[in-house]
Image (tube, rainbow, N blue to C red; front, side, top):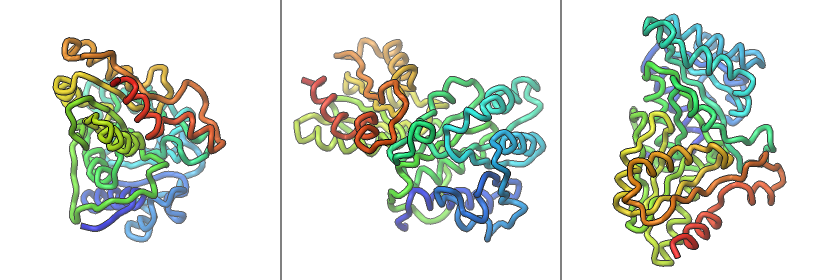
Length: 324
């Protein structure tokens, strides 16, 4: 057991899988010599060499085109798109090629590529470098969507993603890079599509993802001081979506809150709310409440970005008010 930062966990997770399987390669902009713009890939070039850790041109289309070709011919590439916002540049390859390769070849061709990206706000990068885009990807059939909140989950879910036969979008939150936690030694392999109950309470259920998990936990601890005990669920993945854990919790608490960083319109919480309304309506004692970022471009100014993103204060106040 050792304390590890979120960013160091990314490097450890990639290295674990490259040691495990020689067909795993890694490519992206500034990922080799520079160790990545967020320093998440430091040391990989030194251990695995320039044949398996490849610096690419500044072309998201080229990165994913090369990764798809490698995946279709027997490799297991990990490709980095530096900022999740830049998926807009190469979305055609993701949506119309990578996500549909198996379907359109009648299962003859797998495309086991992991596409990593720095996602989300809270680091003052402005409207074009701070978007939380996991809900874009959730809408595309054929993709698995992962967004870990802790260093241990980064490593375990990275292993599950690399070993999956399907394409996986792996969103690493920029606002969590400096956070740290104790992580067990040795190989860690998790399972995709399994949510985690990170706090147990009987009065309400809070469902969160990535940066919103520690913020929801902080709010839950404060709610306990008001006599409101909340269960907090870290979804960890949007596809496959662990609806069973959410539904079981709602059956116990009768109230559901989602905490989402994505803009409100068509956010992932709307899908969760829809499923709960369809399958657990009679378990609910109150309307489902979504706590989200407004449907606006994210500001760069400190005070405005803090106002836009769900904060522990806002989560606490909205749940307390709703719970009466």
